[in-house]
Image (cartoon, rainbow, N blue to C red; front, side):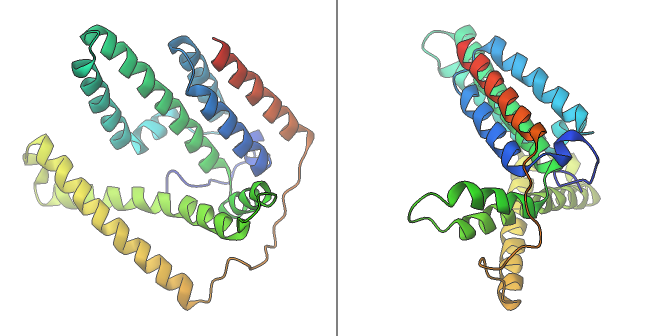
Length: 237
């Protein structure tokens, strides 16, 4: 199953979930101000990180192709509506879309190298000092979301196979996208309801304890330091 944790013995797989989340947030925030050159440089760093974690770029592009299609449409809309002209609008839209692509790739790598339980513990750690926030509920929510995203991609594959079996590929591209998106949305909501009922029937509670614990190492400090440097580079250039 893609976009899900895969057990490997790489640096990112062994890194602390708190370090990976902190690095992801730092670089993602910095990318909102990044120039085109900085976005390309950070994208290269993201690709290197993915390869080091045994995550292929082709897998990322395949799993997020619908998001890429939305970004392409958004870039085209920006190009046609920009008051400075089509060329300026295309350039601005391409830079904005590139930032989203890099952020999505980084999130993909974090998801593929982090256990769901570790995500929950990391979120609880960061939210524990925040007043009036139930960190256990938020941790459970993030963990459930991390576990549910792979199921959505699995449903997408099933919908596409069902459409092909019914000669749906003979339809126009707009009809195919519309029918796939509507069917996927419906099936995802039904599966989410099933998951919620299953958790409730088993007495699942966010206050439950965890057998796992997070352990911070020197490599985690180095990971955060490198991410801060990359974030500073993205903002400065």
